[in-house]
Amino acid sequence: MSKIQLLDSRLANQIAAGEVVERPASVLKELLENALDAGSESISVDVEQGGVKLLRVRDNGSGIARDDLPLALSRHATSKIRGLDDLEAIGTLGFRGEALAAISSVSRLSLASNVEGEAEGWQVTVEGRDMAPTVSPAGHPRGTTVTMRDLFFNTPARRRFLRTEKTEFNHLEEVFRRIALSEFNTAFRLTHNQKVIHQLPAGLDDTLRAARVAKLCGKGFMEQAVAVDVERDGLRLHGWMGLPTFSRSQADLQYFYVNGRVIRDKVVSHAVRQAYADVLYHGRHPAYVLFLELDPAMVDVNVHPTKHEVRFREQRMVHGFLYSSLHRAIAGVRPGQELAGSVADEGAPAAGMDTAMAPSQGNMSLTSPAGAGMSSLSRPAGQAWPPTGGSAFGYGQGARQADAYGALVGGQRAGQVSESAPSVMPPASDNETVPPLGYAVAQLHGIFILAENQQGMVVVDMHAAHERITYERLKQSWADDKVRSQPLLVPVSLAVSSREADFAEQQPEVFSRLGFAVERAGPETLVVREVPALLRNGDSESMVRDVLSDLLAQGSSERIAQKLDELLSTMACHGSVRANRRLTIPEMNALLRDMEATERSGQCNHGRPTWTQMSIKDLDRLFMRGQ
Image 1 (cartoon, helix red, strand yellow):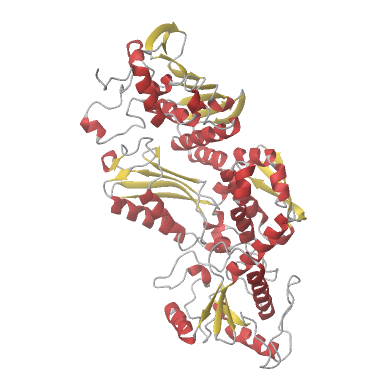
Image 2 (spheres, rainbow, N blue to C red; image 1 turned 180 degrees about the vertical axis):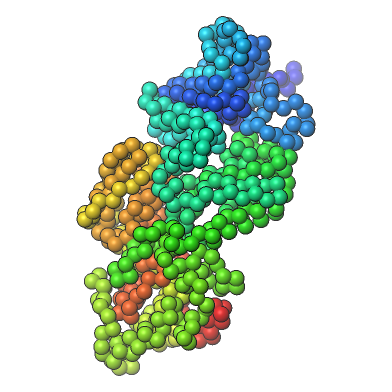
């Protein structure tokens, strides 16, 4: 007896469905792509129980003729490619002809359609072991309706791997968002359990397109985004890129399209990261909605089963075009254009926006001067390095800071110390022990504290040090069951996406334990009434946005607990001293003493080093590199 047998059609389709159908969101992606390929001007999506019970997609596209309906549910049947030449220059979103066959093998699927000029529509269903198609008349306007019910009803093993209704719908809504951003000339509608979630009119002009992006990505993104439109050498890049002031703690607001297809490509990601490298702090992610258009023959979309990845035939050219276009767009934004009201009061306590937010200050430059050894975020705009006047310290404060230090050594106070950490005076005699981090001499490059101890010089990253201190205090507060909160004098209103607003409304206890009091004030509006007391001087709006982003990425309460270190680190970053914040000598010494106490008691450094012991030769090299 032969051991090799042909698989029956249903089993073959169910195996193929393993690549195509992972969850209801996968089904929606395939159906929406088919609807767009049909030239639809309006698409309506109806979902029940996260798409498991029902997923219906109706469009007004070209439709399918009666004779073609049985073929539409067959494997490897498509109207989008005819030969090898078409495969080498694919201009449609779908082309393999496997989606409908795979979906019908693991669900109860029906397809109704009507082409222009026909008096009535027709409907096709597949039943039985051999999946024989049955065609019957059906009243239907021009276009196509695909109805999928009871996903994985005949494959219970796969059904057990589905998540909760809320989780599955979140995945499905993300797919809807990606597709809706890819085609502005088409109107979209999404309902879940008979409730309208999104109603998006066709974006026939710039205003309507911007309104759709604001609806799907949040008004905050559009308020801090720059429009991009560059064309060169047969390539065109257009869309919106977020300013560095709108950086995220997660890469959850990054949409890149190649000829209308949403992708995640290594070449693209690397080019974008390089373009933002000089203006984003470590660990932050840019936000963008960008579209790349090029000759279909220059890109191969048939390299991944789910078509999420592509391969460019001229990778170096595409990388260079993306990097130069985005880098110039960022450099072309003047600091005053970003956020007129975001410059913090220099006399305020050393807290607030983190280094990622630093470009919003009026004396900062978004461009990186050629040959600079450090990011331009650490120096004033247009100022040479070292600064004029013989000073080697940022902001030209070296002489005044040295005088203040001399006065401090002589027994006079050079300035007021923050309430949280009293000033520590240097020892009166050489017999007394000098602290490990020594005593502050000055600020260097606007982001380092230069200190002197018995072994030589110490350079402390003031943002990293303050973040570490704040992180340890937040972690201790969490261990005490709740982070202590403080009411805001004036509540802060945030424009967010509907998904973020839903999450904040459904998870009040999570925010409460983190020290926040967040209420929903509208479909896409949140109001922050309380923040953690340790972060009271931080940027409340940016802080809540990042916490929301982290919480959405983690999902369940169990995963939030597992990723607690990352979440508290994000919060600590917002409560830490920012780059180019001017500190007095007593404030710097207080920070050093707090850092020493944290090093002694803390158990987790969770990231970059906060201080470095340097010899005179090392210090000379640092200055030479900056020249």
